[in-house]
Image 1 (spheres, rainbow, N blue to C red):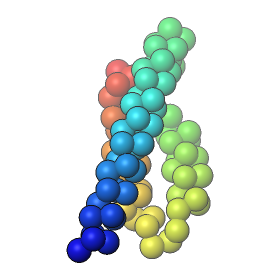
Image 2: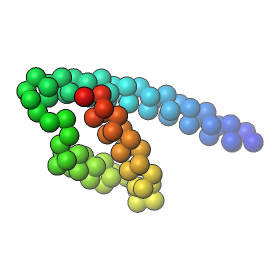
Image 3: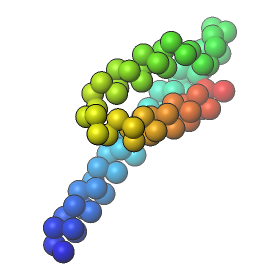
Image 4: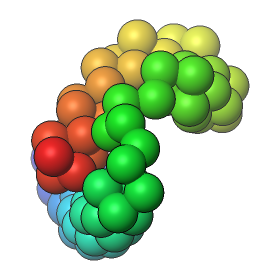
Length: 84
């Protein structure tokens, strides 16, 4: 069971990093939203979103792509909501 605890601790460290990175991403999303408002640009840019999705999925091993895509979709939704 020692190995289980080691894995859990590693997951906790990864979660901590993810939280910091997601907060940083959200901060930037807010700034982007402000710029879009100032320049009368649409919040939703389907071409940009698809390009981001393809670029990110290409970095992910095939066996993890479905799960990653679900997480990434949620991140994009939150980012768009923040920009409103």
